[in-house]
Length: 437
Image (tube, rainbow, N blue to C red; front, side, top):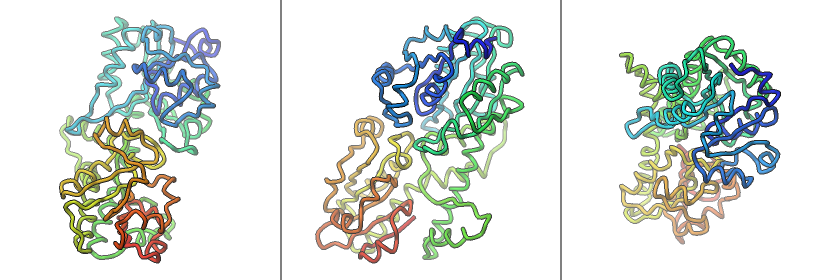
């Protein structure tokens, strides 16, 4: 098996497979200590990184310029790596079942090219058991090598929070596990060289896999509770955020807020756990209930807007509704699994004209992924309603006067603020009909 001394001396290389939101920061951090190969199947992505820019904004141009990484789309380069870290996405399909295509394809590619003595470590979020039950057989099949004798595996779940410049790779405790003690020892040293917050060594790969998948499941359920409370409080006629602010004065009240739950983690990971549970004959009621609530919030938000317009005497069919934000969260360009599309779809069902702008997203990607045309904020005119869907910091510049200017002349501006981004009293004092989720 590859040793840490071989990595330190440069005798053996470390490869990162998948140079997205997770893989690229890893490769950059490791390049300060080891000889790093950065592999991605996208030649366009390789050209972008070789050109010194990361469109995800996870790594600055300055950090890329100083990183010593050999970028490649040629899988044959993996044969030079003693340690291979796989950081590919694990999405769900249209039936909300795990889509293992990326992790299966990457395992096949790694297996076809890895050297004897290699250690393959997965970072992708999976259900407990997948690394050993799915990935290891693929590695054996395509390499012709024997697991445990010719190669070993590890699992160290990613904890990257896109757009977060405080909780970064270096400052978040890293969970590490290996298929045998020696592999775990090596990976503890490897990750320990870049993660200053410390390493938690899990007793097995399955424990590490389970720890990752429940991190986001727990958060998903807490947000689901807030979303259900927002529905109840709306029926009662009280402001949800005012209730949460009051309850939050108790020391042990958890500071969760209602909102849309999308992205590549919270809105996806619970389905990996529920898939495995149902495979074993157990129906996970609580987790799936939370998922149903969170998946319904886009539709509920759109219906709240339409009902408010009706109460105001607006014609709904043909009304112009503006939406601020399309990405799955604030201050990132990431459009994966955004639930803003649910709001758009529901509004269109009512016959409204929907205009969408986003301060971070790439217009071409929005069109490719969702068929959604993005418009400049300046083109949002003669609106009947405005929805703040994603609180990008750029929208802080929108004061009540700027918001009022987006509406039809003589109309009372109506703003539905999903995240409670704007100051309620400031909006009300300016004569804006302001509602929050």
